Length: 393
Image 1 (tube, one colour):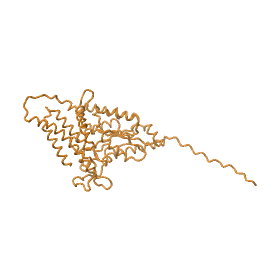
Image 2 (cartoon, rainbow, N blue to C red):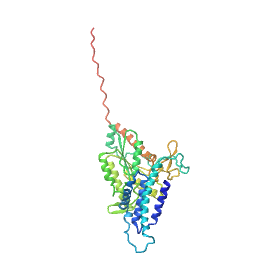
Image 3 (cartoon, rainbow, N blue to C red):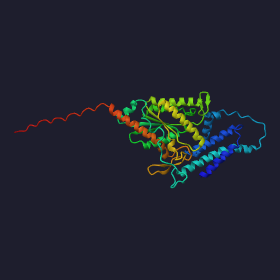
Image 4 (cartoon, rainbow, N blue to C red):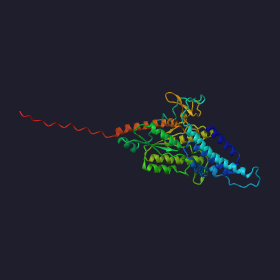
């Protein structure tokens, strides 16, 4: 099933190469939306009946949020004769749409049926990972750029759980699920993440307004941010559009994440920024790597601990690998999803481990401070004196 899906995806690419995007931008949009739909369906449980709506949504997002697509020139009718028949032209457009949707369903079925468990014996060429190295930032100075928040200190003094909020996209979803299992009793881990979101996608969801609404009814003591997988595109700032990682992009994007961090800090949260892993596709990995360098620089300026996880997501040679050696036994374990982007549950536990350790250290120091600041307990009252008995002589 999976090999058939891959061949069908190759067919989509071949049909796209036959489309002249300069004179047929509509067909290009359809092809791109079909590919995005196929990639999404391969990693999510999407009913077949919802795939057409998903396709329309991706197409709308391409138009609204990608300046390159938005700036496509209007279609001009050229009087030169076409070499192929009208029926074949219609097939060009229909093929990339229908086959794209079909392959999305097939890949999704293959993904569900094959599951995410490692085979009994992984291929020798695949199992080349080494023990997970300590990621950058994991051994940094203690995390307390500002005094411990009153809310955290009150929670600890009252014996209430420490509230950890996870903010992000689909990576945030995975990190939240992992942290729920990894943090011990005494922590409450809340999911504030939402898939298919990002700081370049305010046309569909303004992350600042959403976080402000979420935190109004549920303040958090610790905030973990994990965004960026959906942001490898241009950004609109008012009427202007800026290409990915241009000076204008960095200014607009940076202002958004600065305000986001400030919003979390205003209600007393200790904030961590968790990085993204290495990606399978070289071009996408290069974009993510450049963005991570931008995040690290920005968080350093804000005094926010940035925790990079690329060293945790590569093998001994520093390359992308679906299987990595894990645990005391150092046996190969599946760490990545089929798309070469997301993680398996074990993979999310792996990249969440350094931030979990940092949170526990932060809270342990706050507990000591809460004990020091607590008023001394009143001494217990002396035992009541027993009344003297009179005995008849």
